[in-house]
Length: 145
Image 1 (tube, rainbow, N blue to C red):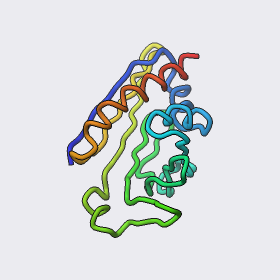
Image 2: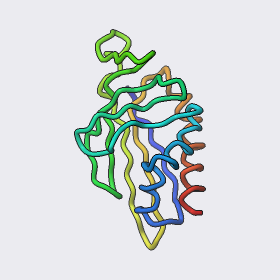
Image 3: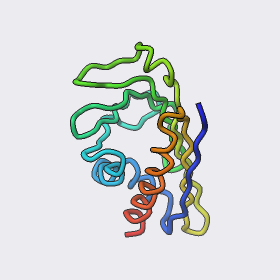
Image 4: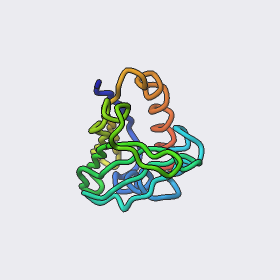
């Protein structure tokens, strides 16, 4: 696993950026960059299960590892869901299970720096390196409205 890092400065308070990141309508908007129809089924609370799904209902099974609202959220990816079936045990999943995706928000004078750090295997490194910057631009656009 390799740690990937992305960041962007947003002219909005971190509370607004947090809302854009994790409120359902705006979450669906910015994550559509990764897969059209993306949505999350979770309450974003620490310890809660989280399903990150595409428009076809396939995606990731995760847990909210840490949640400090408006400041930090850590997601522990533990499996996949395909055709309604959760898989946390296959050899494919075991290669990357436990990967973390972290969101850190720091505000200074009304400007929020959003930092993303995540574990990625080599297979997805190029995809995330191209897609995360587009997603962050979308978060910035939505937050600065």
